[in-house]
Length: 340
Ligand SMILES: NC(=O)c1ccc[n+]([C@@H]2O[C@H](COP(=O)([O-])OP(=O)(O)OC[C@H]3O[C@@H](n4cnc5c(N)ncnc54)[C@H](OP(=O)(O)O)[C@@H]3O)[C@@H](O)[C@H]2O)c1
Image (tube, rainbow, N blue to C red):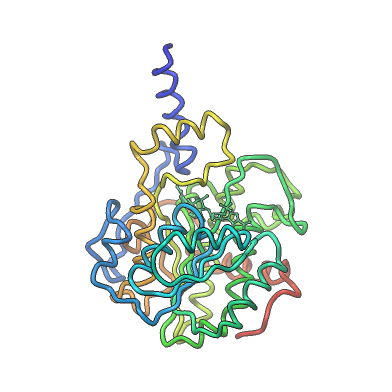
């Protein structure tokens, strides 16, 4: 095998792993026509889906604003006139990212593995006293490593789900203040292709059982979708909507901790099948801003449309979403406010 054949072979294995898909068991995704159907698709960019929109006067929060999808989301929202509060794991990262894009942006520190940092972030934003029109829960990790616990909770679940659970909870008074507010959860197709076979394995969130980074990431992304679903139900009849989405396979830094060969393959050949960050950010920016989606809540989007996913999965499992909510409340005890 020559070097070229080796690299292509590695890519063939690497890309499905990073994409969260197993070609033999690929679910069928179809547009859910019970929701407004738009004209945008997989190759649309965040700029294209917001062409002609004026977001002046709106305030948006984007978590993980210094990299990949978060950076592009912040750039385009600010470009369309929104004031974007961008969060980074420390204030320097957030500042650097905010100053790299034109428009009105405000940097805030947010380390999602640290509940005190989340409270501090929410308090800082609360002091600014802007009604929040858009909250994009975008930040996330995929560790590709061994079991690691933070505050006794498996790290990927803690960062990707519990962190945003607390942040959304504490920002609820500001979200309620806006005339119309949208909470957008950046989940993944991993939520339905690589979550544990039982969905959320509630007896394994603290590392009690076997750990596998593949299913751990899927579980955390399923948690994003179920959190969105339960939030939508609890917010029914209010001014706030909640939707989740899969951005597509996108060439960002999400695989930074992957084994080197996997990372290299993604860097070198990912562009053959992956979206660019400009395309990858389109769905979350579309769901955050498109006027046709006013009032739409509890849906799961891909390629800029709400979708139906075939096969066995737990994306819309209401009892599981309710149980996740109460489990998350227990895990975040002492860090939540009463907004209901
Ligand atoms: N790229 C894809 O193919 C793909 C596919 C499906 C879903 N997603 C989802 O898309 C979202 C954005 O990821 P991306 O692809 O843009 O990856 P990325 O380039 O790695 O960006 C991830 C962002 O999350 C931040 N972050 C990581 N850990 C954090 C923590 N503990 N506290 C606060 N912020 C933290 C990162 O900050 P640092 O840079 O400082 O670490 C970075 O700003 C994630 O939720 C990911 O799961 C991505």
